[in-house]
Length: 347
Image 1 (tube, rainbow, N blue to C red):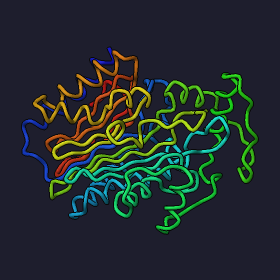
Image 2 (spheres, rainbow, N blue to C red):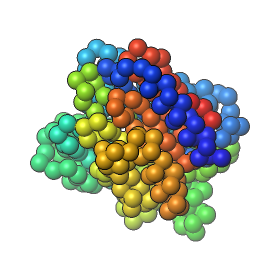
Image 3 (cartoon, helix red, strand yellow):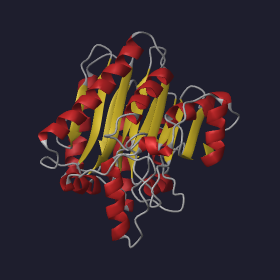
């Protein structure tokens, strides 16, 4: 049933776009995927997520309509989402089992396949900006941990105490997960605000979502350039310096001429299948975008036991596919209105 709903949503987008000329610019955004079902979100929470997705699409559209670059649009929108505590990226990121936030991000440009990525950073306010700096101002593709933070300081990027990223609901979710795993709950971070009650329903929802609040943007500008970017806090109560797919080029983020992908889901599966690059490869070698998405997400990922989804720009058109009950998502093309959706039975 989930497959049918997700496929129907994407086919509706594809059918509409086939009748129109290729837009001069386009953007597609995700805020995470998971077991997001009707009735699981109260009206106020649902409205807040829809508004955030709509505002992100509009902000990207303003940059692209004014002739701005896809690179600038992707970075700007992800920075906003990194500052929004509703999402598992930047402020609002999940906690490790040791009680801190470790952040990952990546960005890639299609025309020259230049890319930058960072993992396990703890003091950089906007990991996506650090990923861009790695791409533009270093000879490397991926930096991690203390080295990435040292590079951020050299680049003059804004740094903050780790407690800046703290949110009560993410802390409570980690504590509950640690206890379930038989691990000690770490001490509350120094400088964190005074503890306050957290709605148990919100914690239940986050667990059903598998904490898939990863954010991502794929944009195509008026020059035809495609850029993809992704930012995340990873998984709740992660251990041993775990790193998922989001900062791994080809797994969670990928762009090449004609195709851009950002992913969200169970990172271990996305890494094993090299999801983002796999979809683009299928598309570039003759499959339609819908066929490539179905083959990788609905067949291969699902068959391996993984869950999650992707957003894609192919031939200038925004698409998405997911094998979960929902995904926070939005798209906008030149001359159109924002399309915002959460559940699997929406366009």
